[in-house]
Figure 1: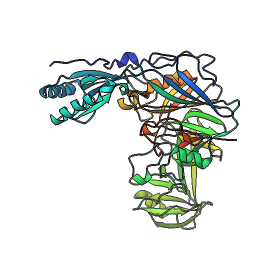
Figure 2: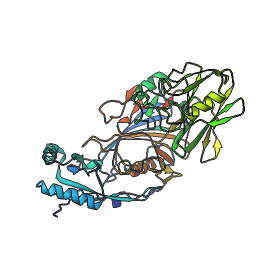
Figure 3: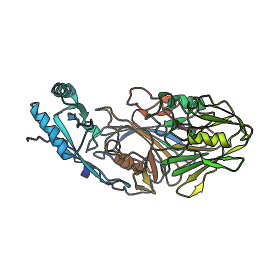
Figure 4: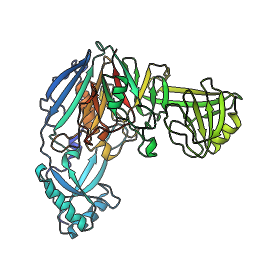
Length: 489
């Protein structure tokens, strides 16, 4: 089989070495670093600074140049970009049968803190410059007509060595001079998605960024549901995924940690049962708590116990109704419905015991009105060192770890200052985004001793003064599940 290696192939293992950058006194402060940009050729970035409010500086940062072009990737039989060597060679033979010269390329997804490296293989045809995308499109069309499944790929998105460019927004919030507070927002309801702009406007925030991942695999009407812990004003509105990274906000302090939540229903007859979830769709035999913030009807096909603020059951009903103001609803189906019928009689008391534990300190968080929590996506930096917990956080795929995407990043410095950043991507020739390793290195460069990745891709948004200051990859701001807001004093 003939093979032609593309220029700019995936020399990933060497390009993405997990090297901890040396910590300096300047990095530990909240000042913008004077060192060269940490990605690509490590050039001096162009930057402009705008003072947003006392203690908040916004930087518009640009670095790198565009040298990447396009190729055509042939998909594996399962529809994925890459597969085993034998599968890739079989696909390459199909390309040769179609009269074109394929390249079988080894792709190494780097090891992270909780997952080993992974090697797979891609099949590609051709290499064209940025201005010649139409030629790549023409080749893709030809291969499709030959019965192959293909797509046009911009090489800057691969995760291999690149020169950029990068368009970044960085908000540095100095704990010594900032006098406002931090908060989480789910918008008008948990179930529905909303733009960061809308949430910023509603709370009259100085600044806002999109929060964590939300559930795109549930009913369209419920896709605002956060995938992980969410606390707004001291109320737990979404249960934690045990061990997943999160940002705990209290007043003007922010802490990155991992959380575990437990919710227990306790009937006045002493019977206790685990509540499986909060404000989300149910599965078989589950007991789920719905609060007035849910913004949707409870699921059908079960039993609802409506509970008032004094923990009294005001009534049992067939499920599928709204949660009225001042009420909570315990919904159960299957064996969970049986528990409600036996232990949540009308006028009985059913206490809802809620605990949220910081897994680093092993201490319970007090669910007071000033407590807010935003679930993260992936841990990036811990105690000043790169530590990517992609598997623990449910994002250990090649697409998430290796490929470049728009990123929303959050970090804290040694003195407790807050760093918020968006790296735009998916805009060939304009900005390439970052992979997890690059995102971690970037946050270390900014001075973060703790850092996490929030939701990204088309969700990445930073809003300052009611204006979206970055360039969302969808072309317009996307509605998201939640947001982190910076409020005035």
